[in-house]
Length: 382
Image (cartoon, rainbow, N blue to C red; front, side, top):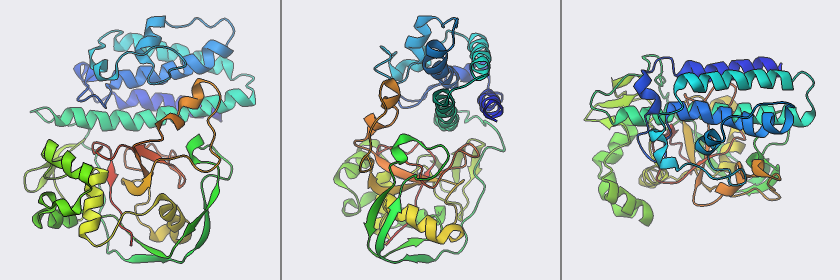
């Protein structure tokens, strides 16, 4: 079963680059993004570093310079190549990286012939990590393509195609609730431990905010009214000249992975920062839900909470901090989530770029509040 998943996930990463031209593979549009080729190499580096080198007898390690180039943020493993300059890494070429991937895959198959529980858990972590990078690859590519005059189309079938139905407010009574991962199956360390949270009574909107809703916010001077914004958000808005969501084009179009497309009024508004989501909520006399409210509402309302998954990650009002009793794992693996628990906000759900099967109600995604290149949207609470 694990070998099947290993093959499926690893092949999907390579399938994602099939629509690309060779020149696209080193594209890095901004410092926060990474080139497609780097994503393929980094996910391979993860398995090489944390599984094959320490656990597979006789394994021939990769060139140590590759470890320097493709380490992301693991300080315990060694020095790293500067993130903003990953687009300069023209070598190794894609053929060499794919050969490395296939060699590592063969080593993983040998390692899993008689796996221990520790190895099984590490492989599962590596696969979940790779699925995260599959999503990031598409997000980064969208950013990079959006900066080009030709506005390339990645894939005509790669866009979000959904609409928001009539919305209503879903009521949730006050009470002591439990959130966090507490059952079987994989979860990242930041999803646990399961713990109790007191919630006052609240309501959550049954569906997401639409492009049409957001157009009304803009028409009412949403980007010119500092009273709607957090001070830092207003400064960010003014400094960067924000007037609309990240990929809107003109009066009625937006840029997508499928190229420039008409902007549908009833489609969920996307690629907005936390600052924009928070300002919009205030304009609507509402607010963003806390992550505990989102998870609890998902538990009790289930299917009534439309687009909880598969459309857009949804900003919450919750700063990304550890749950009570959270501890990091020993060694470099412990750097996976815990070291980022500052200056960021939690997003819940999943988006259309999230690999199938990777989503969970307890999943805690996180980004800085000014970020808006990801697949982010808005669900209101009050």
